[in-house]
Image 1 (cartoon, rainbow, N blue to C red):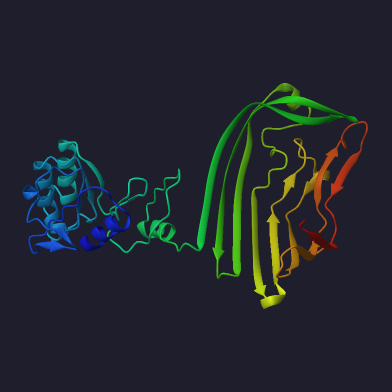
Image 2: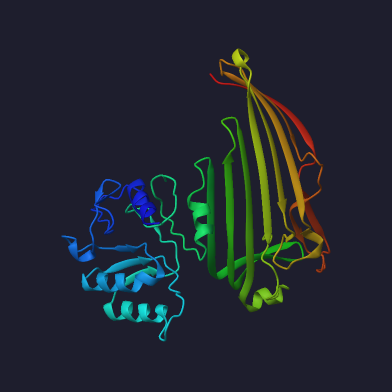
Length: 347
């Protein structure tokens, strides 16, 4: 495990000084090895314990005596025939008393990609430049599955939690649309996208989204219009999913053909704040497909495509004043199955 920690620090591009401590070796992976922590000429910023549970307490004592401010403990802190207080309790007490910052125990370390500090004791892949995202996982194996996925697999994940005050909604009074101040609402959810480049010519993508909406407070004008606290916000399906794939076939000197197939599914939703059943859309799915040809010269493109291949009937939007004196419903549906051919030229 200790060897892998060294390999990961080197793979991650750590720019500081590394001091392996192992009395059995004079050199480890090209680094000078020290017999004990006290032999190190400087005070390290961090110590990574890659030792057995039976040895970790003594190693921690040495680190505290050396004034090292932080540590990573990968051991489980469970030993046979332990005495009270147990090892984990003794270690916790020493860490608190010393004021040491510790990651662990019973963990797999961490990746600090920004500062090039990888303290994990298992094989890790190289990673691109960092972004502004931090991940914390109870499962080290689950985290490594995300971090160490191959470069052909891209994962995008987002969560949001928004509170709205003075939320405005549109309701109907006879034929007249009225904008009223509904009150307050909360919108929470998340999105997950996976993109996989299966080969140089074949790409696959899938995504899923979750949306949870609820009114927290309703003003009197909204209640007078028929909006209730347990109503769903308009145009807010709880779940949505999509998948798509594209394959590019090279035709040597003739150019290339790209075939694409896309599928999407959306949960049921209401198209107004009152949640009128007349303009409620049940869950539905759509399938689109296309075939595009580009010659070797690349100046023009011929595309043959179909939209809504399964000819689904679904509402795009609508208005309802069914319970008013006007007693009318307006429903706007999506386009039925259609086929198209397009020819484009690049000047």
